[in-house]
Length: 188
Image (cartoon, rainbow, N blue to C red):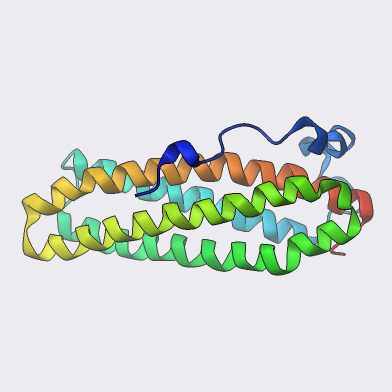
């Protein structure tokens, strides 16, 4: 299991935020450089936030005994698989394609991009831990409901970590990348 003390909790360094001062979040949509590709990327981030929250809320419903274990296991399988698979694909694409594009446009932000890439590595560990716990709970749901309910606490802990991790990471990523995109008129 990942030691959550290793996960970055501090904000992006101030030196990485100077374009954000020029292009604050509430001005992005109106900027002429804000294109559909950027809107789609931000939409994927919103989907990750919603799915992570859904996984936590479903788990809390199970812990409160408001949902049957088999119904919960099916939802966990669906939403958990969706979140883990899509995050791995999304972050792989960012590391291989998106971040190099941003770096080429404005290397002043390479330190911030390196932090985000490290977040991806750390998140992989968190997602692996979640996957192990979730798969164990799903298997136990058909074999031993009492044991499955015990495992639900671990799934809850992992889901809380994922949700908090994504909240900070995705905001940092957006507030670093979108101002670079707008400033350099990328992704048009």
